[in-house]
Length: 277
Image (tube, rainbow, N blue to C red; front, top):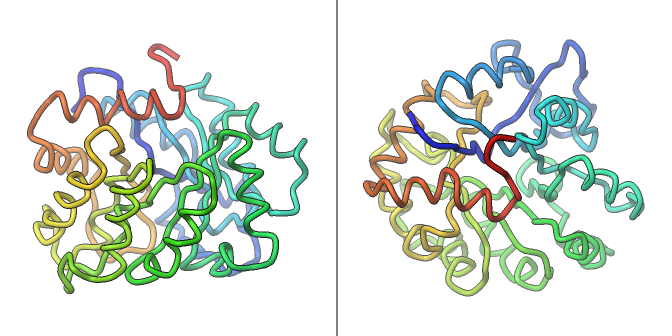
């Protein structure tokens, strides 16, 4: 458990009782896969994590109200990655920035496979870049090889979700993972050391993903790595415990100084978190 400030850089708040799911292609969590803002706050406190970066889940589409409410109650300790329509006005996007949104998420696997290729995509991403926002991308496997050229051109700083979620059965030489490593070596992208249980074929401690994590740290450097839990762990057959995910970071980064950079210094620098608020 951290004894200094720490940021969970990938989690979701899901509260269908108060915020019904949107109709669309997103994954609709079961009743046991939900967690509202109060439940999330209790989880953070129990594990000594002081701040968070929430990510809009696909079940809410472009309706960010559930996430924004949790952010608003946090006193600045929670920021957000939103899903925003390309047709949103500049005023709407600026208002979200004023409420603590620091970027957009492109879910190329479930919500929006055409996000990088439809007409107007480059203009939309240039608007995102002009706000100083990040473009956070969720893709898996070889989809990264298809997406990487457009992401290099987009002009905004990138965040790679879940270290690219490679296929652990194929080894680190697979084309999609090579593209993820290339983004780390050749751009200033950041990457999340999160949701290793999604890539792993084995239960905790998911030894089969360790070579992938080592390659990611080598390509991005510790200063562009972030940690996230992916709470409340939707759509997985793995048995996941929040504390175990923190312990995995200790396996991957034995140096306490490196863990401090990943848990606090990097997200504080990138997203503007401050101690004590």
